[in-house]
Structures are given as C-alpha cells and as structure tokens.
Image 1 (cartoon, rainbow, N blue to C red):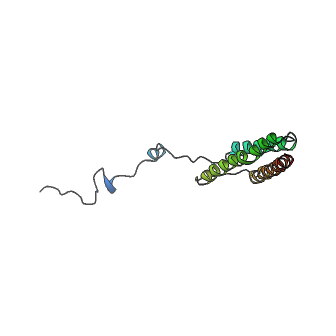
Image 2: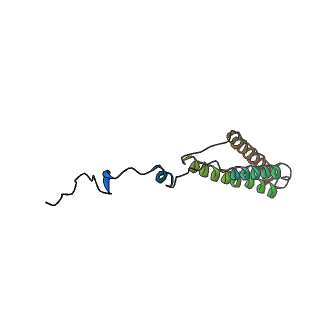
Image 3: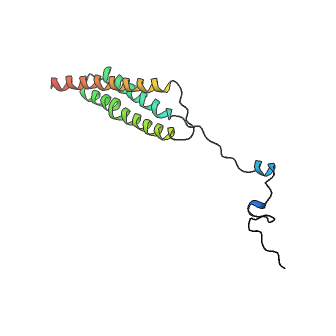
Length: 134
C-alpha cells in the first residue's frame, strides 16, 4: 500500500507541519523603520520673512504708491501663498504614522499671520493715500 499524503501537511516542509523558524531566522528578516515626520519649517520661515519684508517696504519705503504696491504683494499674495503651501505640506505630514511638532510652531504660525495682516493693512493704507492724492 502506498502511503496517502497527509491532508493537514504534517510531515512535509510546507504548511503547518513545518517546524517553527529559528530565532536567528526571525532576526535576519528586514525590519520596517518608521520615520518621524515634522512640519516643513522652511516654508513657515520663508513666509514670515516675506511678510516682514513686505511690511518694512510698505511702512518705511512705501511713501510712493508703486513701492507700497510691491510691499502689499509681498506681504499679501506671496507670503500668504507660501503659508498655504506650508499648511498643505504640514497636513500631508500629519497623516504619516509618526508626527512630531515643536511647541513653538503654533505661535510662530500665528505670528506670521499677524505680520502678514499688518503688512497688508499698512500697504493698503499707503496705496489708498497715494490713489487719493492723484
């Protein structure tokens, strides 16, 4: 009589009947490492610098209308655009398995918004004064 194959896989090298792997074999398997994601601080810094330059250009050098327009563009669309890129990238990074944020990030974000808003308002007032004198 020929021996029939074992339906549960006992006694062969495949399936459940095989002996468990040795601990060394488990150690040699590649391990996945999680990288820690953080906010894109370079974008936040760039946005703050642009907003501050726009504020200075509008407040100090904005006596002429075209210079005030340049300050408004820097503090407004350009700085807010870079800040929105920061927010988009930060949201994508928050979706990763591990995310860490420095404690100073939220106050810095709000400070950039305040500087940008101040620059926009100062430059808009300078532009309105210039247009009113034409």
